[in-house]
Image 1 (tube, rainbow, N blue to C red):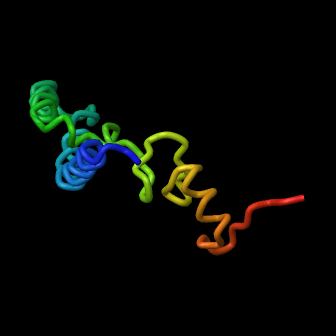
Image 2 (image 1 turned 90 degrees about the vertical axis):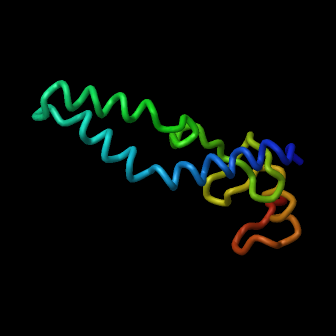
Amino acid sequence: MAKISAIETNLRRQKLVAKYAGKRAELKDLIGDQTQPPEVRFAATLALAKLPRNSSKTRVRNRCLVTGRPRAYYRKFKMSRIALRDLASTGMIPGVTKSSW
């Protein structure tokens, strides 16, 4: 089980990403628009830099929903390999069975 503080920090980051997603997209579009004058693009760059760092999507860490483990994460199931194996072995995940031969 991961530290509760690490899980909570990641949840706060996810909320900030959702809050500032539109604003960040607008500024990035403005920065990438070559038809705009350089002064406008530079002002947009400064405005983007003033946004909270944790509002960037790349700062969010994929974590297991069951244990909070940050490594060995399967995106399809949104959980780590360990939790996936435990739940698949007990038949809790539909359509997934542990192979045996």
